[in-house]
Image (cartoon, rainbow, N blue to C red; front, top):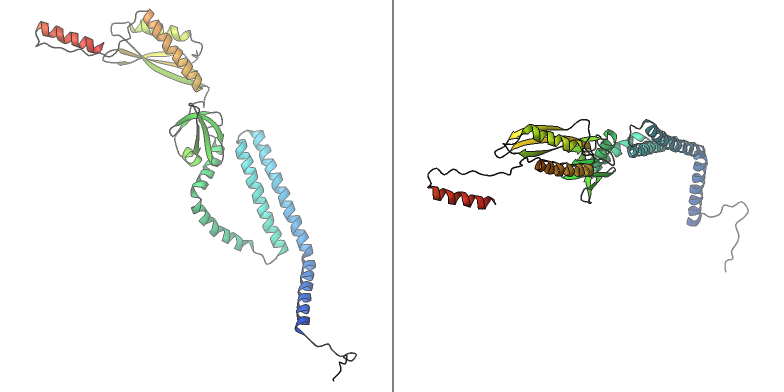
Length: 314
């Protein structure tokens, strides 16, 4: 039987697939370690650059908020949002700069070109969301109204509770909550009832043709002067606005504080006291009535028609 004889000293070991695999793995690991240690200074510099941009983003966010608090010309919510946007942009810029430091072959232009194409698709997909977002920015920047204002927009009346990046929230006078998309709010006509401290109220009072206009005007002025909620400056006005078929209409103008609850309260008091004062002064406040002329009827038939008209009016 042939016996196994060990290889002589200096003779090469036979090459096997197993040994070739080990050599390949060892070479790959060695190349990775060598590449890592060669890139280690660049990695450290890139990390320091990225960390520096992160700190710069936080500093920019704080500076924007402080400027908004000092100047009081920018809404606090808008200032916070602008600070976050500035900080995020600086972090993204820091990532791109650090990537160029670590990988010199990296070109940010290719990435930005790809993002540009992607952003077009995203813009079409989220058109309404982006419209509300930018409308919210404009509302908080231009500030046509602020939180706490009483406004009328679209078909809603109420007090502004919140303005965020997507919607404006109202509390209606009926105690309901209305959430309106900012895109519709910004492009619609808005009536801000509390934009100023004072607000003018008017309503019409009709007196009889046989009554004195000057006397009625004097009575109304006396009533307005005695009501606490009616502001003395500007003073009330009472004008003849129409010679209606059944009455002489006087339009009463007066100014009150602009909140809706105060307007309703003072308006009710004014109308009630004017009615009572005119009754006390024996000034008629006629309601519309119709006079029917019947020249071709006999006297007894004319009496029957007048009686029927009187019952119908009653």
